[in-house]
Length: 138
Image (cartoon, rainbow, N blue to C red; front, side, top):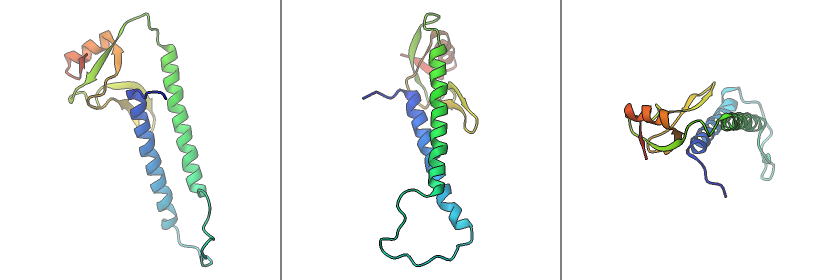
């Protein structure tokens, strides 16, 4: 079993929120249209499996998740670990929503760390953020 990093925890929470919004939107869409006359439903005639709108929402969510995973993989592979050492920091209340993960998603904006998350950042960036009161170096 793999341990989730703070970045994946935030991305997972954001993906779950998007999926919930998509499901709510899918449920609200049929109500907005005029109801079509239907035959009475008899016990055992309920549809099995997701509707077309639910399938589309799941497909869109899978595409977004793949895009976020590709962004993370590209960022990790392009990083040069010999340039500067990383240090573990704790995000303060002041830094909540201010410290960027370095990823931008068009529909959501910049992904940021929450209060008390402990990311690993390059030393120079960690020192600058600590001077501004956004993080504490551990």
